[in-house]
Amino acid sequence: MGFKELIAQVEELKLFTPGPTYVRRDLMVEAARMPNFSHRDVEIVKRFKPVYANLRKMAEVDDSYHVILIPGSGSSAMETSITSLIGDDEKVLSVSIGSFGDMYHGMTVANKKNSEKLSFEPGQGIDLNVLEDKLKEMERNGEKPSAVTFTHNETSTGVEVDVAAVSGVIKRFGALPLVDAVSAFGATHTGIQGNVAMYSTATQKCLALDAGFGIAFVSDEAVERAKYLVQNGKCSPPSILNLVNHAKNAGSFMTGTTPNCTLINALYLQTDYIVNEEGVKERYARHRALRDMTHDWIDGLGNGFQLFADKEVASKKDKVDPAQLSFSIA
Ligand SMILES: Cc1ncc(COP(=O)(O)O)c(C=O)c1O
Image (cartoon, rainbow, N blue to C red; front, side, top):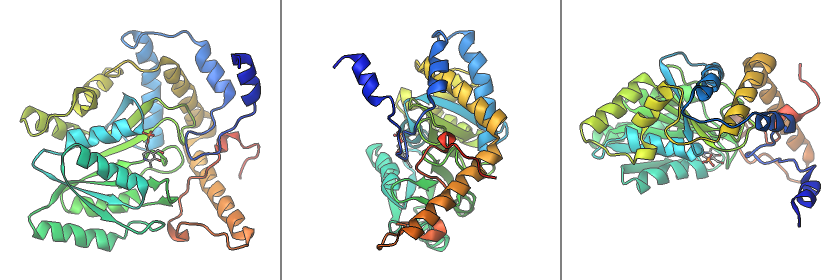
């Protein structure tokens, strides 16, 4: 089959998966229309400055957080948090409410960290009392973790957790909260500011763009800690998953390795659209309204159909790219 026939067949193809999500055709065309450029010249800086500023507004964080774009995907940012923020002789606890919580834990094991997992039943959220008891027990046993991983929105079960509340418990025990927000960022308030050490996400879910970057919001304190660990030989991250290197490049509005320039153009356009046309608060409210619509629809299905997740914790994220819906929600 030739390329033209292939295009004709898929012209109307729309994704209704949790991610990758449908990307607006006009946005893709516009992004690809611009000539490509080198990631080591001023063109990337021109694009990254407004992109960082817009991402910061979406994340609701101030300058005490670094915005870091890592070529790859959400996993690249998540794994960077493991390789760079946990010393070889330190303990890490992974809280899992589903497949992606398990995946984060798997990264700690693959990187030979001293890891432990606390799991909750699929469809449930994180019970703060159970988490607190677990941390107390670890403390009693002299196994206090230096970091705790958890998932903002568990894509496999449709459960969202309260990032600020969970981080609050973790911080009371002196550990760094490391958050996988791959399917949350862009749809809902983050709860990062003053709470989270590193919050990892990606371009292909609620930002409604193609895959190609892991995006991380990292506190100053966490970047300093990554430097300390490396400088004192307490961990040796691989160079392409080294937070210190990524933070250094991000500080000059660049990436450590060669990025996808068309995706940078698309990020420029999409983050500008979200912040300056749609509005961040409005976008988050729209997702919440769509969540409610989806729940109502499921409730009305009958025949034994019901939401898998416990209603109390069912996520704000819906499965359709809402930017494509032809109605607005007041
Ligand atoms: C919650 C969550 N975490 C991590 C990932 C993995 O992200 P990526 O495919 O961008 O590496 C996904 C992908 O679906 C996800 O939904």
